[in-house]
Image (cartoon, rainbow, N blue to C red):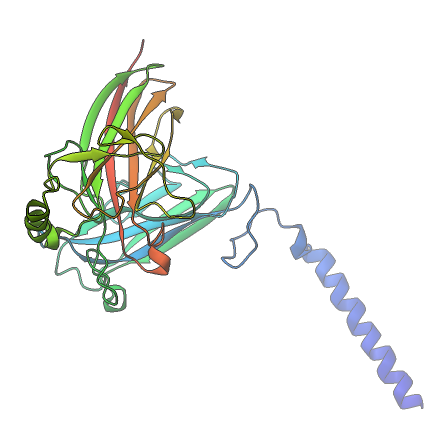
Length: 325
């Protein structure tokens, strides 16, 4: 019995000593700034932004790019982080064309960094600091992350094709420079319009030929349908329960001030006509002068994240110079 009491007293003494040591060192729970944990539940505000490497691969001209997005873990807190110590890509940066405005939640394929084909294991690191929390991700030409940006390996799906005029140059897949440059004035709505098709580029010739045989419009002639607008001059409504063929979403990418879109999400419907070129029109109003960059993300029926795969969507960047009134 005496042995048991002695062991119990010894255990209690050790426990008290450990508690005293923790008091001297300071309790871990009292730390106000710490590294974020990716598996923590998301909240409305106060959380970190995580940079995300989607993958890498060749563009149609053979240029190798690394495609990146981000995850703002706040459900109701958009955050602006200027290029600099808190938003940098190194070595060689800090500016590699990354966003400075981060909308809540996950955003895919937001920008692309061209890299030499012989980069191999050479790494770049994107570091973000928001709400007192620092995150970073390293990127290189890791063979496990190689992607085909233009065709889903399993089902053959391809990203939508985008134009900024009915017969203008086409854009598809990751963003490549600025697709359009516009000018405007503070407080005046600036029209934004693009034309989209869900016809894969590899099928254009076949679709045009088929359209001519059937007497339909040729591929290069646009027909417009946005929400409850018109197609061929007649009112058009999406059938109940049917998903839109294409969704165009406008967001801020870099902005010295606020931007208000008359409509930032545009569901459009081609009525199954794969030869249709769809116009999606909206406008943006800017509350301060300066240089803005807007991003239009164009998704097909597979949805914003391609149903969990890195295909198929198209992102384009538009630069806007806004003058004072």
